[in-house]
Length: 329
View 1: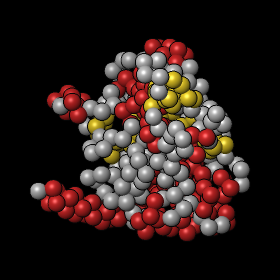
View 2: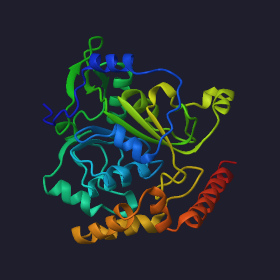
View 3: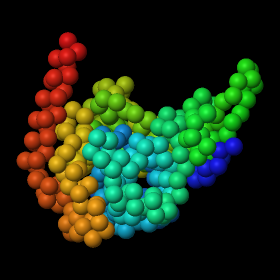
View 4: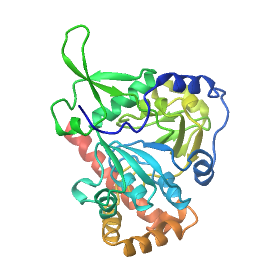
């Protein structure tokens, strides 16, 4: 029997009632990063972050959560790399549904995140990335769980909060994955209109389901586009306005992560993060310089090289996109 803690109730009816009463009017939702976090992210709540790894993560929103000193947050660690690193540095989180955290892939492990885990300062329940994605989908569907065949027979299963069930049609063993409804979903997109209709270029990962599973959704966007443009190509809308509570325009808002087709990840700055985390003292100095010592995310970008650095990373991304397209041809 799995012995992991169920961090979020899968009971669907309260969530269905929440969504039923959520306003559906087509009204402007544009605000600032500071106001969005102050209004919609509260101590003790459970967060889920869109994107994947260091790709298309809402860095500007995460920095503001740290800057405003949020504490006691839960987190869905769905391939969480730099996003987990930021919240662990806060430290903002005390419980995590874990699929992939701590590591920044080939870049190395986050020392501050390791200190939280090894010091017993986080409550951890294990899943796979697929399991977490399907938990969002169950919540989006309004059901308490979805059956799957993942994790059975693995150590991950032993540390999860899934349940084994028997298929009523075939008798086979299945994993029942409980619905996951975050209090707040944070998603960075390529384009949005003022109402919250969003476009994502490239892989959308689990963000469409996440937006439909979360009680509240904050969108940061590389740019705002006219509503008329959304209406001209409605099939490109991945997240509809009625899921969204706040929209913030943040050019470069994924930095130092990779924003597909926009700019490549800043590998030098990510390495600077890892080096700074080696001791609590060097981490505090780093956070003071880059997060607490600036007014907003624009100030952070300026300290990292500003527009010229982003332009360098845009050229790298464009070159890689062109190389990839040439290989496909």
